[in-house]
Length: 219
Image (cartoon, rainbow, N blue to C red; front, top):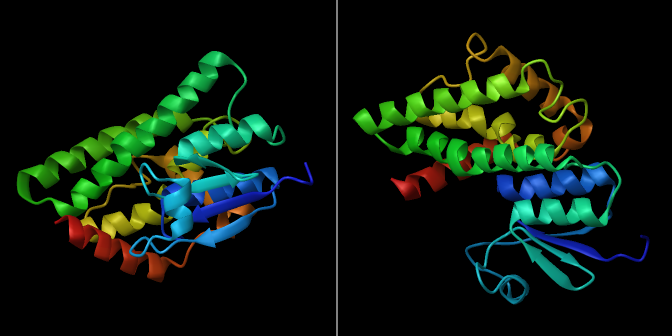
């Protein structure tokens, strides 16, 4: 597919954008990266995503695809190499479930531990531990969530690699405990060391500053 034109409208600090970049790298797809300033959205972003006006946006031969998980599914459908979603319908459905679990529940709860106080903070902390327990059971005995190779669940929960410890610092709580979640911590270490993952991770100090400002705006 040498004649394909692929662009990605993205922002460096977004875990939703990072998963798309990881998928493109994993599949060996050549693309043009366009960094967006979300405080001053470009005409290009407003043109390609007029509904939500958010990143990431994949532009394939002039046609936009929005929302990170939709983009991942699209990439897997068009470029068959290094598949990130299972072929079996049930396995594919379960991969979608765990990917959504990471976005809709786990990321939200990590955020709550950092911005809430008192009883609300305690409740969020306990809920995070329950979520991590579920992930521990899911990844136990596996190299990656889908088996031997990096797949869509790894990409979607991959924010734990860099944001997990930053949320812990912001919340002043230990959530990613290797004694409680040994399999999950081994997965984090293994995933973070994969070359295509490690090479695209943003600076921890820079990300910490950005996360601090984002959490401050939510308090």
